[in-house]
Image (tube, rainbow, N blue to C red; front, side, top):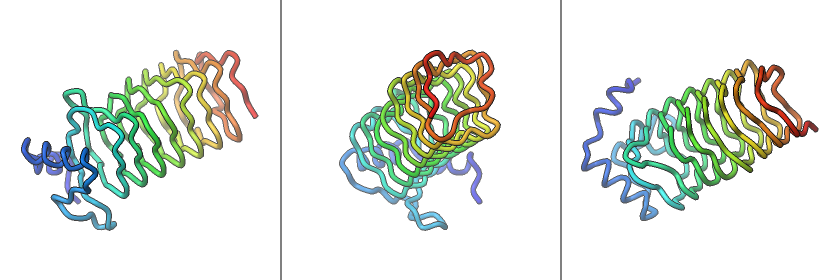
Length: 193
């Protein structure tokens, strides 16, 4: 299995720009073919600039990172693996069956809908979002210290061993699954069903 450094090293500036242009035009770039699991291999990609209203389906983006204003705005991602990535940026749109496991999302700004996504062992320190919908998402062993996810909906999410503190879930609603120990996280007017 390739290491993070090997996956990053295979990307030249020209190839990064070419792949981003293809994604922005609706094409599915395949500079490295498919992974062993059969999905498009874009592991290690550096996202530069805004990816606006694009759709991605069945893509491996593990170890990707956002630089030079790289962000997702109004995007639709289905079955995209973003594990072990560094995305301290805007993450906005509809995300279904996506993995953010062990990713560094510290300070990320969330908007939109997240369905059946995994944030297991993700770093979400100081992450923020308002009126975001999380349905059937896994936050197991995630670090949510300092996170401000206010007026959000958490429907059937899991929180095993998640870490909280110095954040806020003000007016958020938890349905069929809630965190057990939120420390000093502000939970004023939060709803639990």
